[in-house]
Picture 1 (cartoon, rainbow, N blue to C red):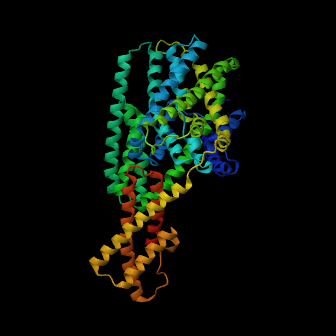
Picture 2: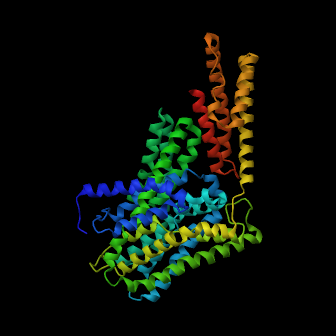
Picture 3: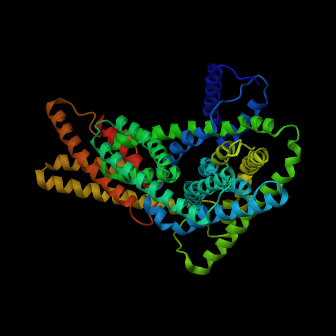
Length: 535
């Protein structure tokens, strides 16, 4: 395919983004994850002769895609949740990634001795990290326990850090021909320290600036820019860009509980939901579109790569199962807490295993493999590495993805909806208690007439019971000057009372054992009540 003007590239981008929107309702009808649908759509586009190649420099894919996706995912978790689950997260995001990279490198090098072990390690590193986006979009419809989804999201947030560090070291060894274990360890430590410092500084500075901005739209816009800034500054200073984005995003998410209001949360939730949908759709559509490029680079002999690809797939999928079963057995021996986000049964372990699909990071790193080394020689095994990487992604997305619902049904794994409803009811009761207590304080402070007190109290109890913002204005039918003054007074009091409820809910988000997503769901409904009360 010949290179076409940029306007055709823009048209292709529009088609992919438009397909992303259509993939959402189609996903609900078919039960397939939007990521699977978009990958398939990209493959179909790539097979059409007159569709142009998409022209994005490989080194730009991660900086364009990862910052918004990481920030959107980090908004659904918290430092507290990470601290409570550091053991399972470390076992998957660090230890399993390293073990997978080593196993893939050993098998690939044994099968293709002409490829240096360092290049094989690069392949192992780029196929090691699962992408949680493909499965989390289906989690609600599949009815998976929240803690299993937390496992996949926590793993997905941090495994890219480990994988990219391993990949970078391996690529440098191949390109320069030099390796020092001590130097690599030192570079890793420096990279981590720089990333944490940059992320914390940007998170702190960003949160202070957000607190001083008057409009929610300005705050959300700044929240969009900060992840990209964290990525670029950390990368320029030799730090881990991905880790820097994570630290910045987690800091901002935690700090926002101190300065955010209902407008910020409502606008931010909608904005990031749309951003995540479009960026994810584009990224998985790109996976399919780039398949033609990989096959063209591999040449007519690409079928001879199938054996190596099959071995790599077997190692990636098989080792994940063995690792998860082993860690499940260890946790079952009693050294875990019952409330951590970890599979409790072998059936849950099977679901977690089959949900380990590869995606954006694998493709971006595969496309970024250099063409030549410092000596000018071709990068050894580049075509075969890219072919194996795409084979792993397509196998896990197009086989594991569509069959995951069947695996969930077979294992009988379902969320404990009654326990979650009870937890949410408990949080609503806390909110009600805080609001009524605040109302009582205001009544005693201002000497409210019994009529005002009773009306505000009844409105609070009714809105909390119904969780319906349409019931917010309990006095819409009052008329006359006295009614208007009374309504304004009640609105002011209600605003203070609602703020007390939000403060209580936000405090719960930082407490151990309280899932952030449950708090966020309650907060969203509280914010909707606030918006209705203002109107």
